[in-house]
View 1 (cartoon, helix red, strand yellow):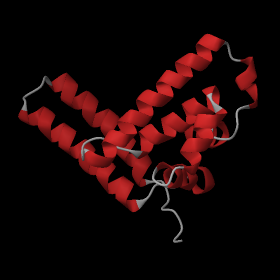
View 2: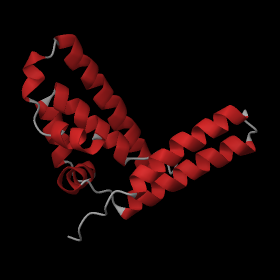
View 3: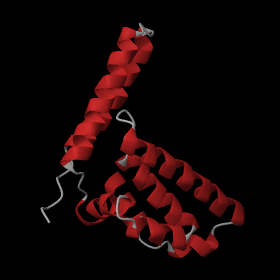
Length: 142
């Protein structure tokens, strides 16, 4: 369901003209914040890149065709989006970084002796996210 919605939404949004100016502006801000977080994920090992880039692509598809196309054509971010759009796939590198990041966050929470409800919540949410990521196919070899 989620993957189908993402694939559909990453194509040009014909309903963009129907969105209000405020809604387009909100999507634009969401896109820039997600893209900034995705860019941080390139250099910070605990911040995943792919999910944030996909959110940015979705947000830009809702707000700005120009920014959406720029992101699709980008030499770093474009292939991540293309793998998802064409194959519903996540690269092995992105999978490893994502899961390692999730385990690190959970380990830090345990080391900081956070309340058990926080740790259990993280375990459930991160476990579900890891399961989703690990069950996505790998992109075909190019």
